[in-house]
Length: 323
Image (cartoon, rainbow, N blue to C red; front, top):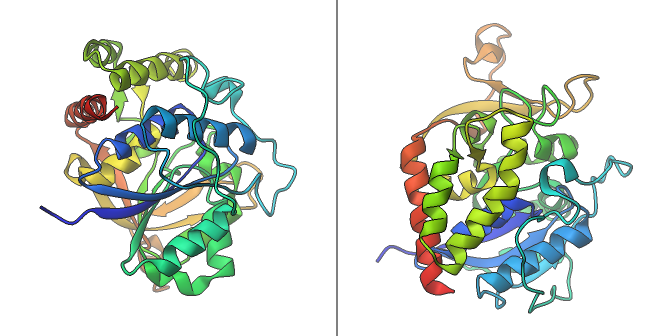
């Protein structure tokens, strides 16, 4: 049996965060989830924390420590929090979820990150599904702990936007922190919109998911029922795009994606482009500007959609057997 990957998941649930948590917790033979941290974004910090606790309860993993993180961007304290047009007022509108059967630990997200990284005898993998605020704070407070991180798998960015024409929501929400993370020197796999907008579930496939009949499968289908409204009505997509689950898939089944090593930076001051990830696929910086710049991210660009959906449905079926 291959060794389990120890991970910490940083999130702001959010329907796709919830689905990503479900996928991660469906594979206890492959992933050792050491902790969960929350950050404001899709809704207020209080709401996303409550949602994360509900998902740990649903998945029967109240043993995993959860710590509360940043209530907003450090450099943009007046940033309006929440995307109710996408996720509703609770952040997880739609399905009926149980009350949390656990509480956050008595330490902050930063303190839990430091504790888990410091005490681990092996490198840990970070899965970052929301704004990068908690991770940037970690790198500022304890830059020495970067060496304890194997890789960051993140959802965010892309060559287009979904919150502004230029910027994806997670990066737009706290671009300064995202820039800190991209320039940290820690290896990154970036599941941006180029791949995640192709990783969608159709209405017909969602009915196949629901027909699996287990508690997890039915809940996942109900989450998609609500989340898909935005994709169909606003974006006009052919299915419900599973953004955050793509970061988990990149960790568990990387073969379903096609990627390129690129230089990625984040625009923080543009009037129209703040939060844009600037992805140099052709090495313009080197070829035209004459500057030597190292690639800092493996960027996902393509996905075998049918294989992705098969893996997602199989994960929910595994979780059915666990809950």
